[in-house]
Image 1 (cartoon, one colour):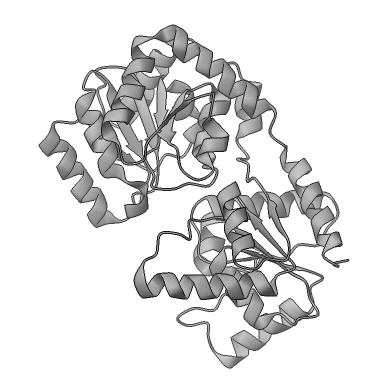
Image 2 (cartoon, rainbow, N blue to C red; image 1 turned 120 degrees about the horizontal axis):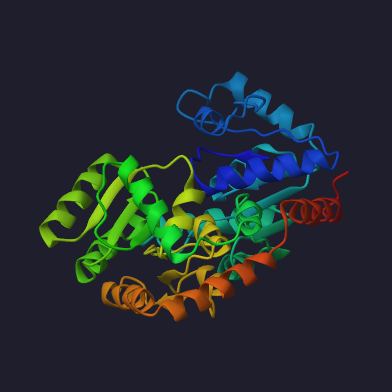
Length: 359
């Protein structure tokens, strides 16, 4: 498993997939950066990721040796795909998984991304996409084989095992969680769990919160400090009841306590937090982009991207119509119950590795 610096969904997926493959008897070595290893407790990872201080000939020789000794190299993300394509011998099958939006770049940067993707797609025996648009992108860039490989949240089974909280229970639990962060709620909890980064379009969240002021909007997550400061200032200026509380240790408790879960990203593949909200029975309002369409269509509220009014209307409609909320709650849990398990995903991947010529 080859993965670069990650503190979010890609790292979570790699940890889960490696664990499940090992349970099936496979020998898995994760090659990554110190940032990823520390974030996910990967004490047995090989810290050979090329970086500012990792580009020495000795470090690259060791990385080449590790890749050459592998039966298959599975690179997660375009950057990892480039590393694998450059350093792994052609006798070792290279599989590349695309997880992130690659269509955001413009100008010269877009041309660079296009060339790198075409190079990696041509070099890989298999390219997977976490959403159908990424699969199509891989095919357009010359992938010999492209497959949809949905990435699941490891928290989903536990959330499905618990019955959703009732309305009064949600209110009590939300009050407890908010009090623990020094927040006095003045209405139902509308939750967003997200990195604070430009692609998350959190200015849309601020505007939506300003339009629905009889709820307590909470943004949980860390990210760019300057953007966090700007976001807090924008919320105060707009009079939006948005509380930015930083990262939470247990997202499961928060999604179970929320009345509505909101995401405003410019693009997502198959957001783990959306899966968790659905499994918890919390209706989702999110933009109709990327893999969110297949994930949420018919069991949540899909809205146009960057449309704060549509987000606000979606949230208000669910808050004012408890029966609609409960209908979507049940529909979301029903869909989540049909997703493949971590073991099933690992079995699928093991089959693909063998088809690629590994083992």
